[in-house]
Length: 515
Image (cartoon, rainbow, N blue to C red; front, side):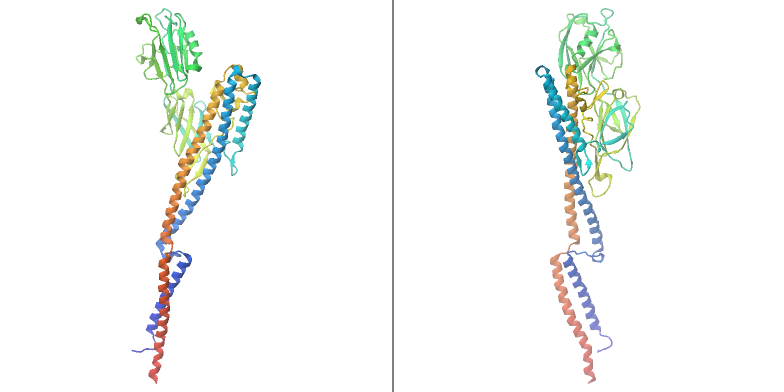
């Protein structure tokens, strides 16, 4: 049937031509952009997932840069600490040289003091001037700020990490569960009315502590007060002290380790056997429970057991409900959200009956954003205390805090003062503490860089590579496929044009029927 009003073949040819034209445009667009998905209609689900991946990639890319920048900050900080460490070692050698007073003149000692003064000034200058991008690193600006610390319970705080999650402050509570103890041995001074408060027979004893060992000989009739004085004169060599029980020689004598904790001990042994084994008045006892004895000892108490050695005990305490690691009077915890080291006051650490002490961390520290999403789980906190000479090496000596700056000319622990007192021990302790503080800080920063920053960077790099590969698989165009489809579309476009032309010519053939 021949029609002229409706050219169905032409309509079909035109529709097919339009479709092949659209397909041709699609292939040209993909080949020109290199993307399989250029708009939502190309692949709605694919567009959603690739856009999400793209967002993650942007966050990961910035997180990698953050980690690299944090590594640069840590490297700069450690470089300054390394210089301070070298200066401290040079000061130590000068102090050790000055302590050789029998072979060094006053002029040489004064020259050493000038070098110490210069080193201390350099340490403070480095601490106050070392910066990264305008931010000071070692002057205490990156230390945590505390409020409400009671010096009667906590003498020193070192906070290395604190996470402020949905809060402007972190509350810290400390509860002593078991007291810190010194190793203690007890000698009775009650000799049944005969020679009370004295040694009844000549005795040679060996006193040993964590510092060393010495032997002492006491003649018959020596008072316990004299024994106390003799033992205390050797404390710097043995680490053992002696005190009269209840300040009364007839009550007895207590031998104690100088320091608290499980690393200290006291040992007192008789080296010569008594002439009469049944009449030995030099029997030593310890408390089986390792409990403290404040002033008196109840002789005959079943908790007293015969002993020649007693070890100290570390304090046991809870910090925010977590059992802390004890070391003498010191407690510490370490976690990503809260890490600190606290020195407890002696009166507080040795009395578990005292109330819980609390304080607040109100700010400070360094916050590093190490993940692609801003959340506490992808952040790390670290605090850096001041390492100026006025802040390093602080020790408690007769109630006075001595810091590294006290080694300067005219200060309490200068070389001239040490020489006048014939005592370089305090200087040595301050220096050792300062060197330990700097070394520990360097180690902590190094561990943070190695175990946190470096591993974080490698993990992010791996995630970046895998997500990029996944995004490419979903979104990028396959050029081999698109080229073949382009050729197909070009052929269809050409053939469709020809077919449409033929369909339009069929209607013109009706004119032949009209003659």
